[in-house]
Length: 325
Image (tube, rainbow, N blue to C red; front, side, top):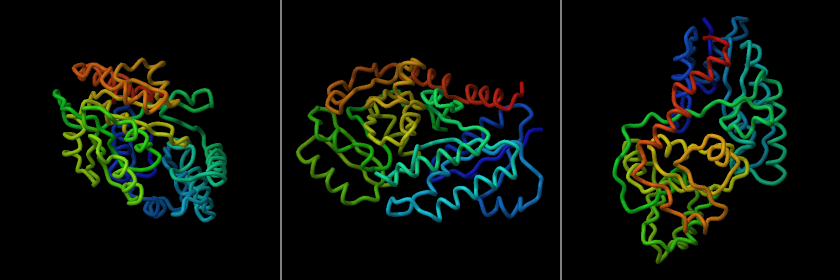
C-alpha cells in the first residue's frame, strides 16, 4: 500500500485545503494517508530513520522566505532548503505544490529574489505541481484544487454583491469602491490586520451604497452571507498569486463570479468553459457588467464545478499520478 503524507499536515488559518486534499487521496484504492501534526512532530516521529513514505506533498513552503516586514529572510531561506532536503530523505517522491510565485506582501527586489529561490527549491523536488492549467507550459503538473466542504447551496439571492475574505490591499478593493454607483449594495466582509487600509476604504465608501463586516466570520455564518449574495467579486491585482481560494469558495456554492482577468481565471473560462464566471479588463468594466450571469442557474454552476474540481476529478488525477487503478 502506498503511503502518502502532506506538509503542513493540518489546515492553516481555517482553510480546509489540507483536509480536503487528504480526503481526495483517501478515495484512491491502495493508498494510505499517514497522519502527523507539525514539522517538529514529523521530525520526532521520523528522526533520521530510513523508513520512507512513498509521496510527500509540500504546500506553502515558500512562505518561510518572508519576515514580518515583507523582506527576504535569511533564516527563512535556510529553513526552506533544510525542509526540502529533509523531505527528500524521507520520501521516495516529493511533490512541491506551488500556491504563490512568492509570498504575499513582498515587493521589488525581495519579491524577485524570493521567486528565484522558490523556483530553485522546487527544482530539487521530484515534481512541481499547480492548481492552474495555465502553468502546464512551464512544466507544472496540474492538480485540481479541492472545493470546500460546505452545506447545501442557497437557492435565493438578496440585493447585494460581496467581496469576501481577508481585507488586504492586493485584493484591489479600493478600485471597486471608487467605481461603485449601483443601486445594489457592495458588501466587503472579512477580517483585516491593516487598520490604515481599512480607514482608507471606509473613506472611499462614504456616501456610496457600500457596507463593511470586518471581522472573522464563522463558517456557518459565512456560508449564509456569501450564499445569499447575487455574486462574488474578485479584483485581485497580486502578480504572485496563482489561483484564488475565493473563486473555489464561490464555485462550491454555485455562485456567479465577476472578476478581473488573471492567467488562472482566463484558463478556467477558456479551457474549462466554466459558465459561472465573467471576466473583465478593468474594475470599471466589472462594476458595469455585474448581473450578466444568470443567478437562477446556481445548481448548474455547482454541478459543473463539482465535475471539474470535485472529489472524483481529484482522485482520478491522483490515481494517475500514483500509477494505480
